[in-house]
Amino acid sequence: MQQEVTITAPKAAFGQDAVLAVAAVEFLATLHRRFDGRRRELLAVRAERQARIDTGAEQLGFLPETAPIREAEWTITQPPADLLDRRVEITGPVNAKMIINALNSGANCFMADFEDSNSPTWANNIEGHANLIQAVRRTLAYEDITRGKRYALAQKTAVLIVRPRGWHLDEAHVKIDGAPISASLFDFGLFAFHNAKELLARGSGPYFYLPKMESHKEAALWRDVFLFAERTLDIPRGSVRATVLIETLPAAFEMEEILYEMKDHIVGLNCGRWDYIFSMIKTLRARADFVMPDRAQVTMSSPALAAYSKLLIKTCHRRGAYALGGMAAQIPIRNDADANAAALEKVKADKEREARNGHDGTWVAHPGLIPIAKAAFDALMPEANQVSRLREDVHVTADDLLQKPEGTITEAGLRTNIRVGVQYIAAWLAGNGCVPLYNLMEDAATAEISRTQIWQWRRHNVRLDNGKTVDAALIGATIAEEVAQLQQDGNELPTLNDPARLFEQLCLSEQLEPFLTLPAYPRLLELENRNSTTGASS
Image 1 (cartoon, rainbow, N blue to C red):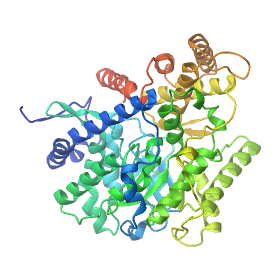
Image 2 (image 1 turned 180 degrees about the vertical axis):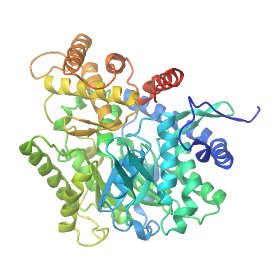
Image 3 (image 1 turned 90 degrees about the horizontal axis):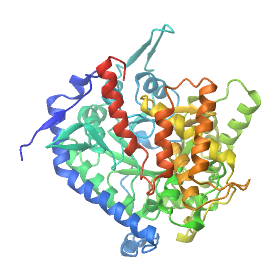
Image 4 (image 1 turned 90 degrees about the vertical axis):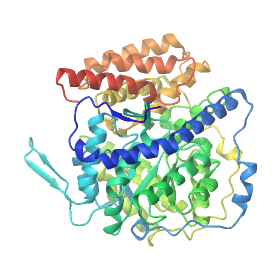
């Protein structure tokens, strides 16, 4: 087979020539040829395992074959100095203004996100990498012409951590030997190639958040990618470091093993709560006895989620790793003082719970929440972290992790899921992956909950608290009503008709789509190509 790399950009993006320098593309091609076959094998293993869970042939639990790892005494390699205190981390997409504001926000760390809060248009991805190259070198600036304001980096900034897309996603614009490159390898490879040495020279390092893993074997793949990158880029072994998001139900049973496989490259684990709730629904979708209540009723105080959080803390601290808390999705409510006070009180209570339980830090989606989160951790965690709190009092069983959250299923919950899901998909297709809706910052993870809940309710013929049965007719009629209301209310998003059709298809499909972004991505590419042909912005 002829070996070649083809790039099918709809139009050149800002900074594209520098980002896709010849040597950078060669590095991407090497990563692809070395690791993509193994990635695809692991994705097939995921699907096979899910099929066994669906039929009842496999029950989730701690793996007997890896018991020696869990029983042995070992610790991870000491984390780098600039990651010792991570009490507040802010996350967001990779546009220039967001990067500058997040790095200047006063948070300890900023997770620059190519995944759930980023719509993966060519422009977003390439310009994101161009922005990060400048941010690492402290030359990034942004001019807001409409406001007459210039944004630039402060003298002291948050530590930069980058989240590549998950193993399940491709980057369709780049094909190597005829196959699309893994989006994970694309995002990781470009950032590491351009910035690893520069970050190390500046006293930091190439740090990553790794999403959506389902097993320690997927973690081992990342480890081998890191080792290969270090050798190829001629940087010290162990200088690439990662925090792994435990945001799938299968991964919750393999936390020890994930830490072990990456012990020279890992820093900690994070409670990716929204994706974790989505994964609970997705993984146990065939079980009629595990139908989840309204999304708003599934909180970290639910026994299963509390067990997951405490197990993560205990596991991390036993192995010398950091246990990061989950996202506060609330955003300040500027036009309602009482509602704003109530929302901020929820954030305060959530962050105090995390700090009290033993987490070493937490996430926020909005700069306005940083002081609240910081105050909670400052009061309860005076040191840089609390890894020394071993939580030997915590004992979590498989049954604890598999408890169904209790609550009701309501028509209001159904309608909220529809409004959020349709509007999020519309924004994502328009190039925006991070959307404020109803005083919460929504991203792909929260939209996933919305559509999988409806799928699950229909699959198991759930009756709402008002007696209506969730079937195709009710779903179709309610989507039509909610879309009409959104349009009547003057919704600013582009047409909602195509997003609504896609959302309805996802809710009514015979088989549950693993991720809504998989069927949505070809639509995004079509729109991108259409816009480039007509001259519209992507």
